Image (cartoon, rainbow, N blue to C red; front, side, top):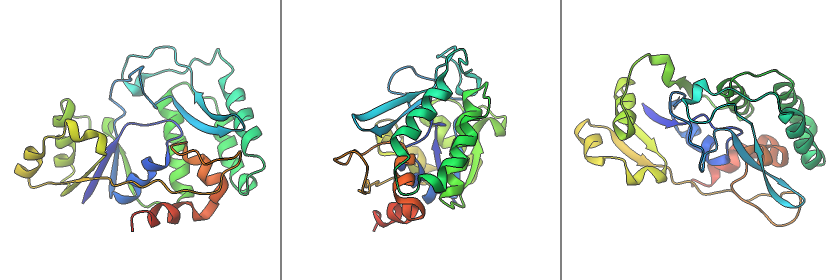
Length: 228
């Protein structure tokens, strides 16, 4: 049983779903605290004629557990987001094939960020035909601790034999503890696929919707091919 763990990002990038695709169970840390700096919980980038652009969901508070974050709907963010997405992707090859599902999500009223993010994550997972089981940390109703201990305890709770970690976690993963618990610690070796984009030179590390609107049904296989 291979386990991957990640926070519930907004319109996640390609590497997020590459990790999900390689796991049997993908645990979403919805009880983690939101950080104001370098955080993609409420924002991500798309490509425009002027380069990359952040789409940000405004929040009423910013330093509480992610599953308690409320969206600031006094701002007209949904209309602005959708108009920006539409203006920059309406001429892409697969816009007409995929626009409706995303538009329905944007037309829905959301009070909590977690509900919006999960709707987008599950919708994209379905488009990619991924069989990975998604679970929320809050589903377990268990205090797993903090830091690397939290990660290890979640994997143990699920009887995981392999933990797939992002390379950014090498600094704090305790490899000895994984070994002592007979859990294999693997690191995601993500290689970014390159594909034809609108608006000039290729820009990596955007939301996966950029690839979906340009590559359509080939998206997931193009991601998998990078692992060969």
